[in-house]
Amino acid sequence: MRLVKNPDQNKKSTTLEIDGDYEINSKGRLALSNPACPIHGTKYITENGWTSNILETITGDKAKIIRQMHICSECRTVFLPSLEYLKIPYGRITKDGQRYLLELTIEDGSSLRKAKRRLKNTFGLEIDISRLWYLIQATGIKSNEKTKELTDSGIKFSRIVCYDEKILRKTVKNVVKMSVLDVIYGYAIKEDVKKNKKSKTIGSFLIDALEDKPILAIVTDCDPKYPDIVKNNFPDVQHQLCVGHFNDIVDDDIRIAAGLNYGKKKELPKEYQKLKGEIHYILSSKSRIIAEKKLYSLMEHELGKDEAIDELLLKTKAYFPHLTHFMDDVRIPKTNNKLESWYSTMEANYNNNRRFKSIEGANNYSSCQTIFRNFYEIKEGAYINSSPYSRAGLDHGDNDWLNVLAFGDKIYKFIKTIDKAILSKIGFI
Image 1 (cartoon, one colour):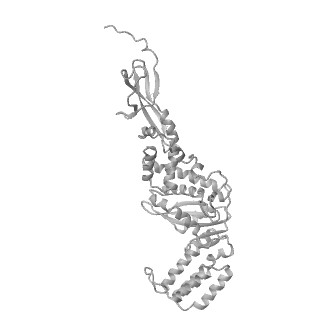
Image 2 (cartoon, one colour; image 1 turned 135 degrees about the vertical axis):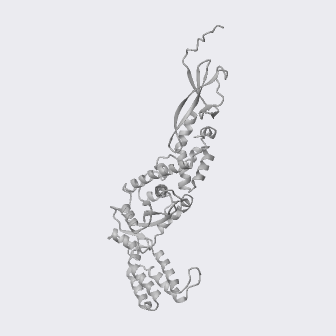
Image 3 (cartoon, helix red, strand yellow; image 1 turned 120 degrees about the vertical axis):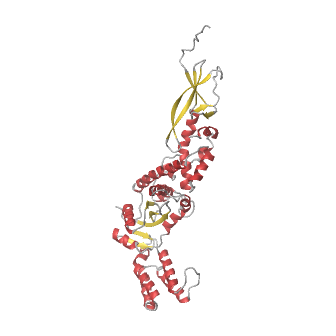
């Protein structure tokens, strides 16, 4: 049998990238399901090696894709699954997908599992929960840096701040989220997660947050340890204790003095109701001088009649200087409601994402929350259509925290433009 030399067999091969039905073959490679030569059909098609490419995944990581090569032995044309139709939507979804996940977990408070499920239903993409958590951690680090940058950028500072802490659940042991807010403008100056709420820890946090800032007053809850913390670290600063919390203490102490059990809702005897009202009345005065006169008048009439009442009156006298700064300066609030409202607005978010593996994890999640709240536009009330940062004079042209962190426009603008059939082809990543 005589062999006839094919005149085209020495020709250099041509490579064609084709968009078609893809599959993952037995070797784990991305391959065309039914590759066919435009000239010779499928008759001369055989597998012919592989090539690798790098694509950026939805979490910003790099993923290697191995593509199976096919060749038509007749015309020496090599066929590859096209990455063009993968790269265009995938490049779009890299940032959009990240934004969508952060909107779900940070803004809406969705759990990681729910966010993962929503991502798959919306984009047809699978993502491991550990990678989603990594995305939050990386974003938290960026958020913390951005918050510090904006706080130090010369925005308005009212010189009056409020401090509070909140318990966050942790897998092994609970941790404490500490916050300092500008009372007038409402933005968080600093938030951090600490192992405990000992006096030394609180003092260290406050110094770190307020160092080199011209502080006029600090508002805190009515806790016995706070006066010493503020006095030791900020000796020239006025310290306003929350009147609302002190009134709660008064209510509890009067119930004890009246011999009532906490668990029973028995009404106070009239004489104790009157005493409770008089103490509340003192702390509603228009000036400190008037309040002081009322206090000493009450002590003159009641002191010495009952040991429990005496203890309450002396406690009121001891706390009095820290309970009345607001009377002399209307800018100083009488309660810590500003910060408590800040916490309550994000309570639902923490309920779904409240068990953290480490303090760093809790801190990074908290940092995302901080910048989100600082940029959040109020939808109603006196400050409608303004954010804490915009009220502080920050002219950044955008109240969207994810835009500020370079995540692009809101995701819903792009959802309709994405071909889910194409995206499903890369769902294996």
